[in-house]
Length: 79
Image 1 (tube, rainbow, N blue to C red):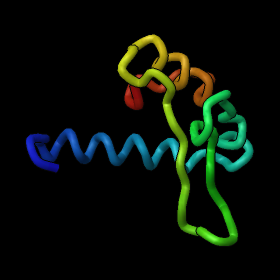
Image 2: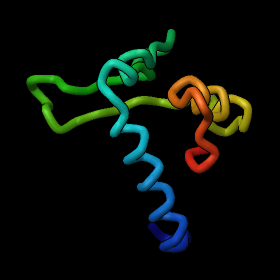
Image 3: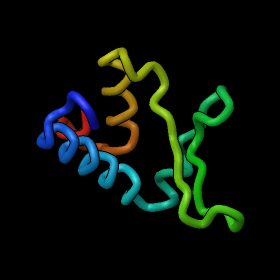
Image 4: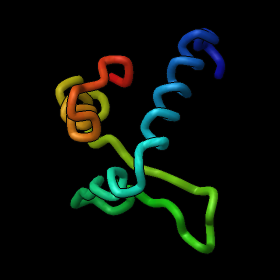
């Protein structure tokens, strides 16, 4: 990724691994009013595809709320 350090990229992908390694039951709790913001995954037509959105990801409090929703004890590393 141009303009981003290797350390930042490694941290980003590690955090995404943590998110998508959560149990399926947990990921399915990601439900939002906007289309394509919910957890999408385990489709027979796209078995390797997973997606989920963090609404208002530019707002620190929204990212914190998203993180606290998925990790009961928080996950400062993900934030």
